Amino acid sequence: MTHQLDALKQFTTVVADTGDFKQLAQFQPQDATTNPSLILKAVQKPEYAPLLQDTVAQFRGRPMDEIIDRLLVRFGREILATIPGRVSTEVDARLSFDTSATVTRAERIIELYQAEGIHIDRVLIKIASTWEGIKAAEQLERKGIHTNLTLLFSFAQAVACGDAKVQLISPFVGRIYDWYKKQAGASWDEAARAGANDPGVQSVTQIYNHYKRFGIATEVMGASFRNVGQITALAGCDLLTIAPELLAQLAASEAPLQRALDAEAAKAMDLPAVNYDEAGFRYALNEDAMATEKLAEGIRAFAADAVKLEKLILAA
Image (cartoon, rainbow, N blue to C red):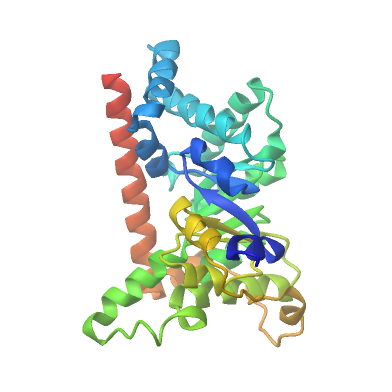
């Protein structure tokens, strides 16, 4: 029998969502993604403490933002030694509303990778899907620096990313699910809102179908999963980034798995063309309470973890 992880890999590129590169080999993902929260979690484990200490010792006295970028690149380099594909490395979330600062920081991260002998095509720069972040990504893509637009919760964000020709987007399935479940309170029916009826799954499905229908090359990578059902309901998505615990569950299951998303079927769908200028984007995002709240919350959380990481560096 084929286990679900191998079955999923027939339809979808599987990406590991972790900063814990020692876990990667057992699941054989193509790519890996990191973020400030995952790196913070990793450096607090005893096996990664030397990596933090070595980086800080080597670059002590340099500006804090440079030390953090060097630490992120160090993790990225270790991850790339384990996987055949790409690693995503995130720009400081505190720059989410500053296009030029995001571009500058992204360019430095790429330069640090190149100094380690890593080709530009093996790195995706992760940027929050604010209007300013999307505009930064558009500039970077024109320079040949590929981007992964994260904290993406709405169709409007996805449309703007497609228009900007970003390489990849990471719509957050689990956080969308969390919001709707919290809003529903006691009336939430878990069984009725599972699988294809999960609000996070529905969001990614809408984005995927729109991209394929209109020939938008941006890759769709579902992210932030809460359960295996959300993953299997998106089999066929370009990529799915999955935490090690859920990868282990997929590897342990022999339940049948079928393709759920189909690019050829999407091409035949009768869907309206959609585009946004800045005012239209901001209004559409404002109209989506879930996306507005989760985007702001996500930026705050990543920024808070960046501050915690700085404190660990100062203490090292």
